[in-house]
Length: 231
Image (tube, rainbow, N blue to C red; front, top):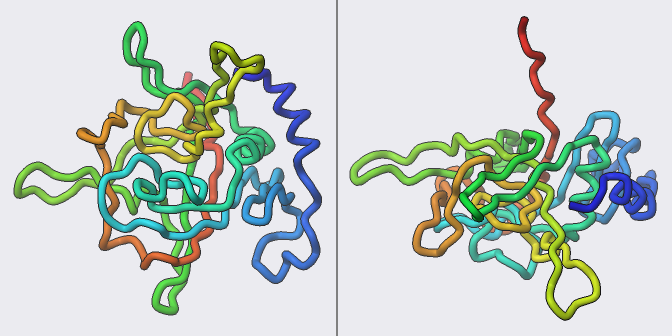
């Protein structure tokens, strides 16, 4: 994992002040814009992503991916560079852990717990609720589906050395932004074992709850503060 100090330097170089014209969009003027569709608010400890519904049914590997990557297995897509997304999370104080490990034995992803919410307009009404409301665990034969109960964590992706290449490769560049299947380069993942093989995907889209394709969705990501231990 790249040292947090280096990520912090990259963050300073990457951000630009929010422009006054953004006030009309509903985004607070004190936010910092990293990309047109990616902002962070250090005071609220909140990252905001402008996304779009691209999938409403079928098995899932991700909840959110960059456009032109894995839209066939992700409910939302956005014009967001993975490195800038990682920097935004670090910028609001989220603490990364580690993506899933498979050797010598499986270890689930770790990292600070995250709250992820979606906000959008549907049939003239404003909606805001947890992202997990759109994700289901299919029930057994004859049984209704169950809501996803897994927790999102800031796994933080990782760097790996590739034979023949001078520089280490950051796996987050593959586009695994917010995952529900365990990937070695996930930026955000679920804190359980979730098979990423096509034959055994664990979660699927909850079609009835997801607005039509093309719906604009604002995604809010916040760190969940650890509860103080009781005496």
